[in-house]
Amino acid sequence: MSAVPEAPVLPETLVGIEGVSRRFGDVTALDDVTLDIRQGEFFALLGPSGCGKTTLLRILAGFESPDSGTVTLDGADLLSRPAHRRPVNLMFQSYALFPHMTVAKNVAYGLEREGLARAEVASRVREVLATVGLGEQANRRPHQLSGGQRQRVALARAIVKRPRLLLLDEPLSALDKKVRAEMQLELKRLQHEVGITFVVVTHDQEEAMSLADRIAVLDGGRVQQVDAPVRLYERPGTAFVAGFIGDNNLFEGTAAGGGLSVPGLGTLPAEGGFAAGAPALLGVRPESIRLGETGTLRGVVADVSFYGGVSHIAVRVPGHDRPILVAAQGPTRVRAGAEVALGWSASDAVLIAR
Image (tube, rainbow, N blue to C red):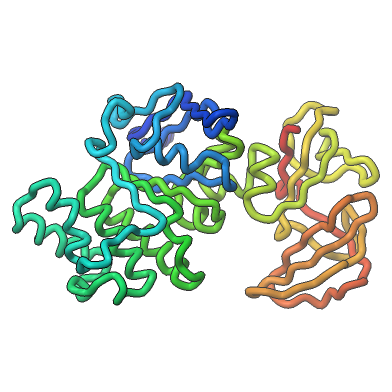
């Protein structure tokens, strides 16, 4: 008799957020938000401007108080502790470095304010500057550094105090695309190396997907879905998540045997579990759609573009109100004006409650 494999042990919850709401006059910034953030994970708060993610970050940091709800850290009430007494650090979007201080002095500032011994401060500053790869820049001032290096100084200053929780507010938004990609890898490496729980606020899907172990997608102050990046992409749980995370082709109709019944288009293949006749959306990603001689739908190619090793093809299908997007690896022989058939596997499409 074979042994039953043990279920994986999940890390313990570090931060528990329960029923948190915050209003500013007539505006509801957070509406009954409940989340758990686990020890040692890289957690992202993702959503459009005004979705409430920065308000939640400020509540964790102690700069804002909720109207209702609880926040705990290691099971103890966090809200009753003033900002300066929380084992939490916030790395600002602007980095907020002192221009007249050297890199080493910027990093040492918080430790010196705590009254640590000079030798202890020097040792910890050397250690953290080596970790972020800035040991040779210790005596430079911020204006002598590149944008990526200034970002590392801000990160070093945040982690040198060894907080239980590090909050990052749009940490890479000031960097150009190439440096941002490098710093995404660097942030992930550092997070694993120092073992601190990171919570990042961003509106950049690519940033959240590349950095986070789990992502909470917010919209209108509400949590839409919390999941690992791949799961969010492949199995969005709401219409908002399906449209917000990456490119998606969405069809509106009613659940039917084998997929979704769409007026004017017939039954489109998808795996469901929905009761027949239930209103639903079908989502299928551009890379899951095949072009060929036969398929579920037929249309005319409206546009073809090539970028980054992928061909992007837009196809107009009679009866559908927007072009269907198709992504194909490498250059394509398909040209605008060509008649094509579109198809996909039921397992590559997802049904979403409407």
